Figure 1 (cartoon, rainbow, N blue to C red):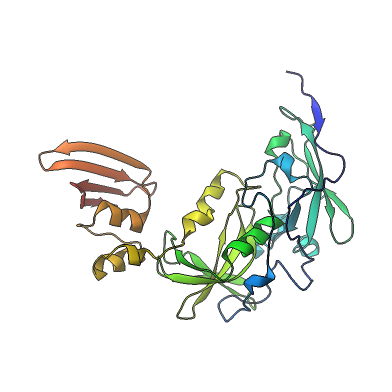
Figure 2: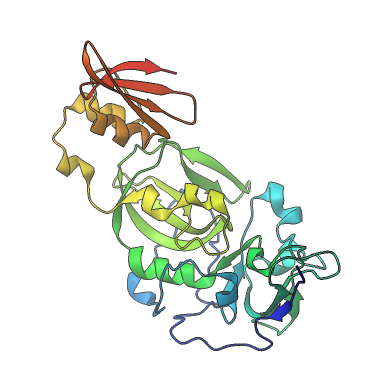
Length: 324
């Protein structure tokens, strides 16, 4: 098949309804959090942020990135050497982190690519007009901006969730993190599953897979952060592990289920025990990868298999067997 070279755009396209755009990271409204997380970080005011994106949280195709602003995300210190590795020539982390750029042009092969015809994303730095570009021997539709996040994802998340109380739906009680600025390190924070948390700030996360950081505070004053994906734009298949809708509930599940304290204590620690119902086990361990059904002399049996190798067997809706 003969490849046909395409240029999606050669100039900036103004898109109506993009909403509030990124300020420079050194401006009065930074997207990069400054300082530690876990010791009374500043709280953002919801009324400060209003986004008017006509398609909030839509998964944008590469072609739809033209005219959109992206931010160079902060990265864990162990990965900073190659943080923005898709760019050619390479971009220095300290020089670009926190700055924003607008996609101006996307070039590449429609059906494929080779070494002689690489695909590229061209961007213009918002603060000084510098032009930078990625290079990839791949179809244009498969291009990514590794280490960058869509600015409107942060704006839209602030508009929807800032100041709200949500309920953690993490797989483990130690999925949240605190950040020590003096050591430049993050450490796990133990917060029980389905705990109430208030969203006190929303900033840029560590990865294109989860580019939006929710800074959270429990009623007891525990502060931590969780990085999530709100639109799946500029993210691969593994971004499904970080979907915001899977990490939080908007309603308190305790109010909906009048279960004994023993059951809730187990669920909040992502534990299970024999005698649980299928609904209770699902709330504790999440959806299984495979469900099998059979019958025995004891009645209807349902087996759940998880990617970890664990297996649960329910008899007539009650957990009877746990295999780890």
